[in-house]
Length: 603
Image (cartoon, rainbow, N blue to C red; front, side, top):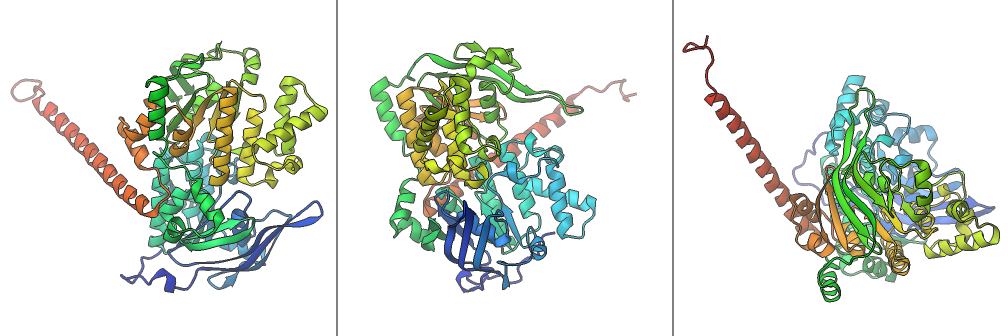
């Protein structure tokens, strides 16, 4: 169902074309405890065909809510005023019936948290087919074929099998790819991408960004990109809108904002962005001076040897080996970064470490406790010594509990403190993760994605664990808050000396925090070394592609990195094609040299 190709060879300059979307004096308010609180104030911008407008700012600055108001997707206590016109049609105040025709067909949304946006009771294939058949006159067979084509387009592994999978059966990155496939299914005029690459590793992120660039040129779509990743902004954006506390504080083209920001907040935002490679030189010099190049040794907190983790067979689906022969040790006070593609086994290892998944073969020892074959009774004393920050805060927090109770629950269960003492400890934890104490009585749905993630971090640190498993702990945070949380994390880690398995796709963050980096690929550990060595001189070809795919917050440098990465991928593809051709030739030679059976006539 792709749109026809443009008829003109030479496109009109974007600045001269009529906007697809015109937003004027848009205001969004929420009714909380008898008062209206503004979330967005007098927001004004245009989006033209083929243009990417990036909206950046802190969590709670109004980025997402101002965009969701365009489609009538505010919660019941929210209201929108002002004007937002799509191709001249007013969206604010449009009837729900007309909005249903606009959603998905004219305007598509890639939501921030795929686990809560996808329907858990339907397979992802059914949900994509449903979107297609709602907006187009298509039969089931044609819709299924188009859905499979879209899953291949977003690099979904084994799309024929994943088509029938449910959201909980996919990794975070795979769920995000399924949602992107659904969003692109109708070739929308306007795409609102709310943190579209939050859960994706950098290699898949690069492919998704390439796909979005192709979308805007192929069907001339406008894109509103809401993100905290300034590397993605440098890679994609034509113009940038910077929001703070509901207002636009600065706007301009990408080159102006990155090279000559005017507003102090924009400068602060850019200064907080971690740069890949910026820490490596410092790490090498300090490491060599203080430790002579050796990894600092303490008491081992986690020891894995030839660890194998399998998901059991279900019906006709065979057993799947998610982690295959991984050996990894983490010492007290050490932070080890674990990176790799979605589905490579990173999160599976993290869940096995905290006892949520059984180890099939090999050895896994946590704080002296053998996890292989351990019962729930064996693991109960260990729960206090291990903390975990989940990747998706929306689904990991109890929606029926205020966040104060969610944070205080581990303290009450394991230490027995309650009353004023518990309240005081909860408030201290809220202070540590930069959340107002007044938020303790709010529910998870009343917080932004970044605020929910900070609640998850506070809950994980509440018992001061010996080992912390951090599964994408800063994925939903904007860069300024991320910098504060990472600084806080470093201080807490230095003060308490807990070991940490830091799982992330953000290599710049991993490099900043970790003394060592381990790289996973297809369930195997392909490389492990000091952070400086892995970032500056990666040995494995997959690690080289991973490093090359990391976007940097500089439009000119990012363009050069993208060109180098494309050249690296072309060389790898040519090498693979040559190997396959050689293998075919070898098979032909072996067949030709095989002796003929049955005498001279071959009878």
